[in-house]
Figure 1 (tube, rainbow, N blue to C red):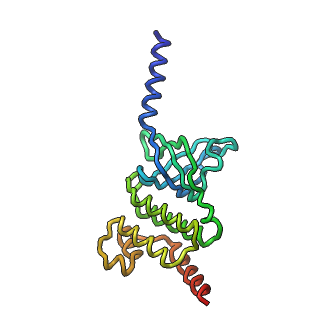
Figure 2 (cartoon, rainbow, N blue to C red):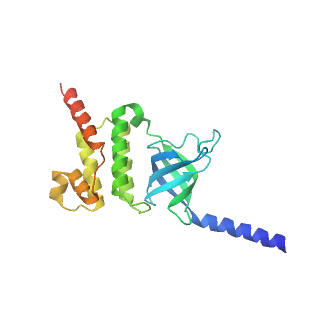
Figure 3 (cartoon, rainbow, N blue to C red):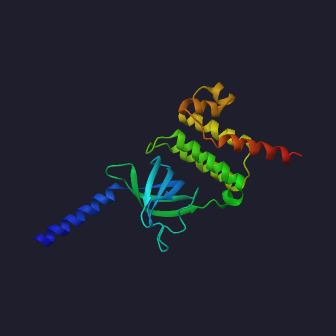
Length: 207
């Protein structure tokens, strides 16, 4: 009887685990060391919002996550939601698009990093917002194939402000970044040097 009871408990545990597991398209925003073997990985997802996950064993050489967890990667991920916190367990990653073009020069990488900072400032964790994921996917698709311009950055800011709830069309057209800063209290410090570099690049290319 005790053996049957143990088996039943194991099966119940598996069922409950399966129920909590969720899969979604995702873009890797940030990662950091959690322990000698594991990473904390942040994602912008299509169906779960921006989530934070722990990738257990990801730093081991033979980890199933090896080669799949780098900045700006697009993937399909599976997670098990945390019981008592918003730190979820990453169980599977299927790499879809490593967007290598973003890492082809520093300016593309710098712009992608700025977009990530904006997303992090303007979103609540675990709050579903499919439009946000779509915007970031398009932006990274653009940077994967093209060098950034001031106009591209402004377009991203305008769309993000619209998604975030800035409905005043005059503010959006005049200064979308100001509208975002006013709504969320701040903008990334990286914005000013990025725009300065983009302006210089645009000036040099026009000569």
